[in-house]
Length: 332
Ligand SMILES: Cc1ncc(COP(=O)(O)O)c(C=O)c1O
Image 1 (cartoon, rainbow, N blue to C red):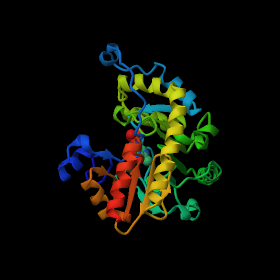
Image 2 (cartoon, rainbow, N blue to C red):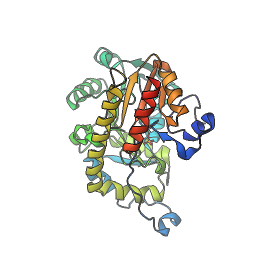
Image 3 (cartoon, protein in one colour):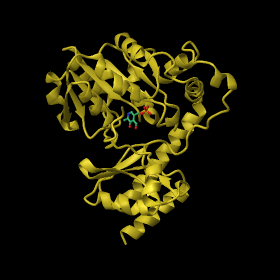
């Protein structure tokens, strides 16, 4: 059963109903998914008809793309988020917060002790926790950790059989900063999650990867069962991961759009945190801003727990203009 209490972006149908604005009139800035997705090619009929086969080229293409051999394709990185807590006996798990709420939810559900810690406090917890989990760059607050720092933390954790789990769902536009570049083979206790949803804009096909040593990959593979990654997802994943020209263009697009969004938002707010996929800010009137924008058909993500809002990237200059126009009215 899914947990309806965890809020997510991308719920445009709910917005359309709540504000009585037709679906097609919305600008959806509620996710961190690139607004210009990799264009899906025609899928041959055998792909729809035949069961997926794990000895196709997907793994080899992914191993080249991620520069790492110890990978398992999964039906979205969400599968790893749900399964990893069942790969350890009851543990003390520190999760850097604010964070993607599915992480703490699944560790708690599996009976672990979860500590919500801030980015500044990690070092003091390292000796006493079994697992450190963080998202790099962080969703939602865009915090970025260096590879050096993470490697030091991993060494400290692995000295007492601890794990470091790094969710790199938003790393593709800065792949030079990925931990995976440093581990053709994953050492025990280091786990990295990757998603096809964000950078490629293919959240709907449900494809992601977990990189880890074989003891963990085997457990996740057994939990996931056969055919969990659909044949169309495997087919499209292979193509998207090998389309280097598109990847290069998209990196440039994300860099430019995020810079533009940062500049626009900084005209109205102070302390705007930005990564290539979204901007995040804390504001005492966050709920009002979300509501005012929604009345104009712009859907953003509101975080009730810490009075903050997150803006995904507008797709084009028309969308930027509409956002700017709305702010001019709200703050006039
Ligand atoms: C930080 C983070 N990790 C993982 C996921 C899950 O992504 P997927 O299952 O589509 O790969 C999300 C989805 O929003 C996310 O924000």
